[in-house]
Length: 336
Image (tube, rainbow, N blue to C red; front, side, top):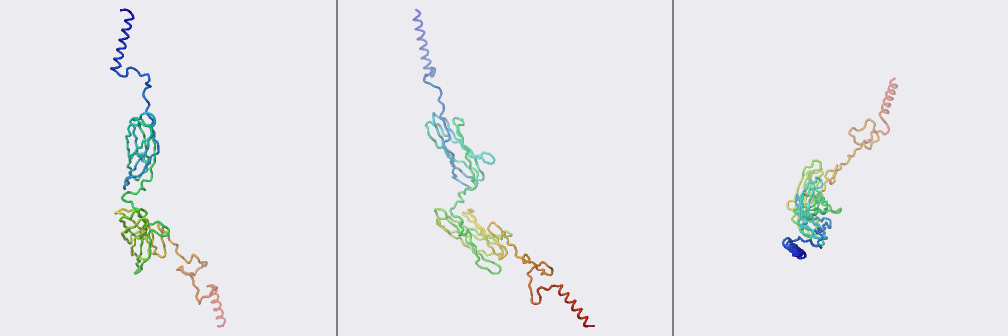
């Protein structure tokens, strides 16, 4: 076998082995157009976090949370979003939710929603973190305050005490007085600020004596139907001891739950008066505050001094003594 034949046979064997290896083990032969692994697509938060209360109870509030992810570029595998509520004061984690978004293939935005349930008495930081294949790629924070001001579902009503400078929420007037007892006429003004008729409501009116804070009277009145945008008055009477001042507390109830309050006063003491949320005592009128004569011989009772017909204005005790002495001398001369 000559040299050329040997080389040809060897080359044929190499080609055959190469083809066989390529068939048995894929990827042995490098693709000249292959540029290596593609970089993953970019995923970021597209907008601020949107929050809205969906369910409020006496102790907790559930927040509907929504954010948007923006994807651009190649495939982004295994994308997840973690929502976490952290107490703003203590830094403790209140609740955590992880949402699996999956693989993002197309450019554009993807809406991600979940809900977080937290206690109502705190303020919270809502932390949003985006992961791509366990790699943290973006994050954001939103602060939530004032959850305690949310009204629980069981206490929601469109009816409340009227808030007007012309029409007070609680009107008080004297209906009758007898035997040191005063009967007060009380009227609680209620306005329906909603779009539907009122629910089954009650108003309780409590009178507290201003100095002792003792309850002197209490009445509960059922409230009839109040049409949308209309104002109604729940009226009753309460009899209390006269010559005292009273705070009038009005409480609006719905199915046993207190939903609104208002306050007024009843001033029956002629010497003193009180105001709502403030006590004011008049200074007693005293005559000595206006006297200019501070000499002896004044009235011990502090009352005003009066002049009678037997008094001679301008003559004092010294003049009377001198007159008596002159009379005695004159009588002595006559006796001689």
